[in-house]
Length: 158
Image (tube, rainbow, N blue to C red; front, side):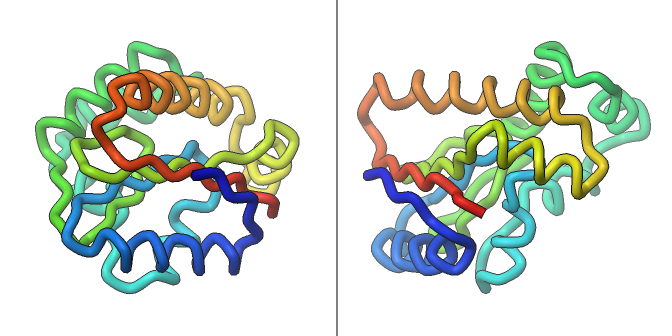
């Protein structure tokens, strides 16, 4: 299912998805600077992947992940750590850069123009966010080929 949404519409859509799938594990995917944390903070009962992962990292792991520019090697390393250390619980949707094992996957997408605008506001590097977005889309498309999960696509408009 694909829906174009503003911020409030996104919150409403996510709440409806979470309600419908309250007994399932839900992964909400989105790139850096797309608004995951802002949305997650406004929806009770949800989890931010970073809040689960970062306390478990040692200094070397954290330093490697925080390198700039973002590369596939950094992404692969982070993905491995997340899959080893982070698990979704039914009824506690998790907002993540990494596709986690779940029954339901929600992809928060936005145009490259809007992503560039969000990056500028946060002082982030657009190309890093775009590279992460491309990796997420690759994982999303790969999972959709398996067709063994429920997929929601939300196209953010602000």
